[in-house]
Amino acid sequence: MVDRAMSFLQTFYEYARFYINLKPFLGTIISEESAKKAIKQRLADREENFLKLIKKGIFQNKRSPYLKILKLIRISYDDIGRMINKNGLFETLNILRAEGIYLTIEEFKGKKTVVRDGAEFRFKEQDFDNPLLCAYYNIETGGTRSAGTRTLLDLEYISAKAVYYPLVFDIYNLKDCKIGLWAPTPPLGAGILPLLHFAKAGKINQT
Image 1 (tube, one colour):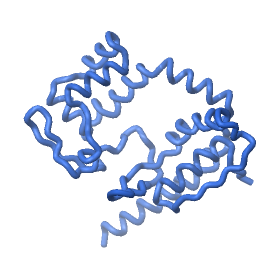
Image 2 (tube, helix red, strand yellow):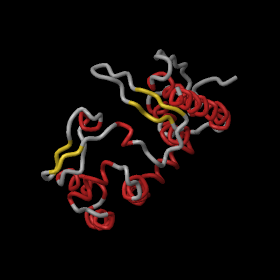
Image 3 (cartoon, rainbow, N blue to C red):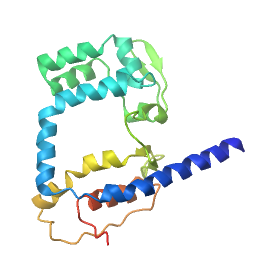
Image 4 (cartoon, rainbow, N blue to C red):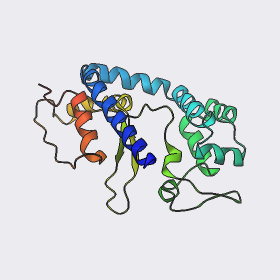
């Protein structure tokens, strides 16, 4: 009974935070010009941003499944930094993949034991929660061929992804077109995520 009550309060708190922060989230629309600037900056900073991400999200996160595999194969944060300086980001990712630093979808969902270098691990979806995200509540993928995947909904992350939409509208000449969305209701992400992305990109009338 106590667990159910705590779960209810947690859900209520998450939805309340989402409602309170939604108006500020929608208060600023991403223009095509600002989207181009943001993407150019990301491309210029991608190696630095990647190192920041793995430092906080993996090497400073004791729960990270990737950290367990990296420790097993004896690859440190400094090692990855040296790889990037020498080979660039994409080649470094290929090297890490070849060393066994990866997870299949079955391993990610906990349906298959992870076997690397003679060791075995078993992970849960919650183990992959991003500690850098300020989650408002959980959503789920549709899971057409299997059980849906749990995903944390974060408005800051949605804003970061939404910068691509104004450019897509421009490329396909959709800036002046009306767009209709047919999607399932929450908690399925297929419903709420496109709605929030389109709204942030100015394609939904908020009045």
